[in-house]
Image (tube, rainbow, N blue to C red; front, side):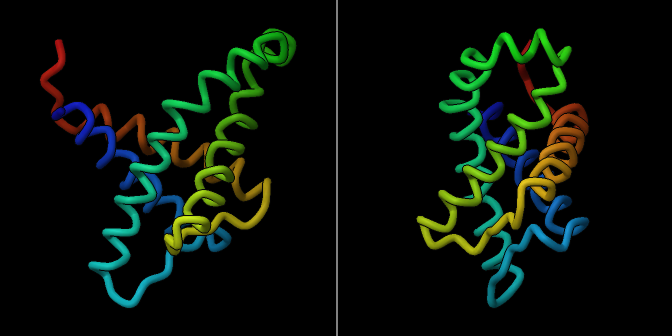
Length: 126
């Protein structure tokens, strides 16, 4: 349970950094508390998308991994971020990614920041 909480907080932080750095990734809300709650809900949604959809997409695109020497990962991460944005819109969460290239850059930022936060945050897994 602690591992799930740490990953969700890391995703929320990474998504927050992407919102802060890129003006085409937006998070709207009346106040800071509402924005934080929305960010945590979007992080949960992003984690669910990465848990359910991403492995299937990676399996189906395996030949492209070999052909592009793994660079297709950037496109897959962008597509997962766009899917999260679309699902957030369907669930009336105030999170939106505007455009594919913004999603590519946002996916790169989210990946790097999430990795760094997962390294920094405590986790009791051995």
